[in-house]
Image (cartoon, rainbow, N blue to C red):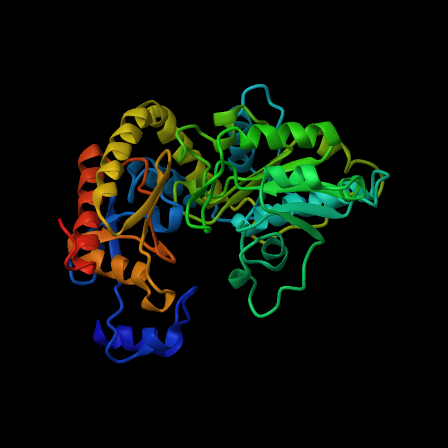
Length: 424
């Protein structure tokens, strides 16, 4: 194992990771070797609760027999074929089931890609190309929001509102008009509005902003505003989709139907990379005609194993009645989180369904207290990552109330440990 970790430090490069500290001889990386349910096991045999669903992806727990079986059955057929000029049954079945998750079928078309960033890229490119080839080339601007995060590819990053995720330069990508909140819409000029092709938002909650909640009703108001001005609404449900907020999709909490719904992360239950961009018949028809096509795609678009995993995940939703079990879990989660408010180091707790951020402080940024808290939590059997000094708790939906209690209690203990002298 020591030799393997030496090879890791010699050759690998990890995302969002200060590699000098990682490669230091004194650092002993955790290697995750297996998972079962809501638990992960490291190379030493230690078990941990998966407190952030393996970066917000896992839905039904690890090693789920239904999803395992779906992937194995597909593997006996074929693992991957091109989706450019060909089709296959797993993609057809998955597309139909995704459309059926939104009653009434306004989002009737599904375009598959690989991850959250590409789902966003598809929606934005479709929006801009739609207007350009349908008589409104002046509509070349995307309305975005401060502190938004929509992915790391060049175009997706350009509509984000967190500078650090844009790399060394910020002057690239799509033409954007960035505002702070819904109130700022009222200050836009008619000229600015006339150039808007679409608006993009993370509905209900901004993830990488530190689990920042939008005011109740804001999404509904934004949807009405866009409809009145024929601005196409893009919802980034990469994080919030598939039950995280208590509804299958966050937009259903405010009865909003967007023009684009971007899905990834939980679409396969956290098993394999896959994404989907759902849109309306109106947008689809805007791409019909001689010489017209959507010139975007990936080698692994609609990969059969990914589609099989997604179908297996949706089967689990139905057979285990996952959505029906959520209200009780969310209520229990809320009560547990409220018990942390008594800790002096807890500045705020923000929750949306099964998504929560516990902000600690105030601490100077150079102290990296969020990172230290999450590292210390491992000793109490909890794995998660912070957003600066906001500790994310986003367990798989399969989590039991007892496991939720264990998770929050672990966080309580570690917060008390890192803030010595405070009453416990």
